[in-house]
Amino acid sequence: EVQLVESGGGSVQAGGSLRLSCKSSGYTIIINAMGWFRQTPGKDREGVASIALGDGTTTYPDSVKGRFTISRDKSEDMLYLQMHNLTAEDTAMYFCAARKGALKSLDPSWYTYWGQGTQVSVSS
Image (cartoon, rainbow, N blue to C red; front, side, top):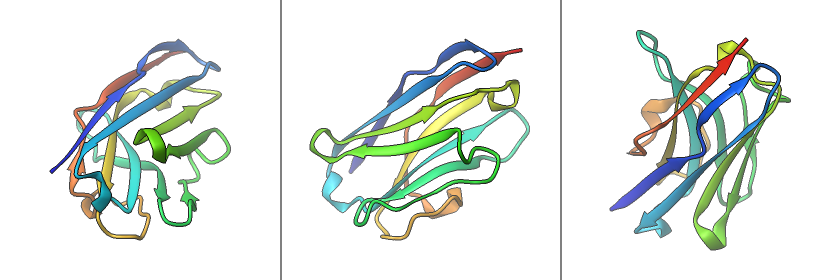
């Protein structure tokens, strides 16, 4: 129905920046909110950014607020996560997700569609 493919992960030194991308394809008209999540082995998946596609409003947890920015290019069906001032604690697999509901959310259980993830590694 909807496919998501992330890219842009990699290795960076602490204090550096990365931009993650997520390409949506398929029946994308049904998507009304999207988010970025991350997960490390043995830990729950954590929401780091979400956007409501209707009004463009965004939400972030305190752990990344002011450092991460989520944005959407509707014409290209692309979702981005710009990350600045990265620390070792940001090391994780990062996932793009989408949902039919209009409300943005950092709760991964709200999302139906998921990408395969892209690894971000930050060395201190």
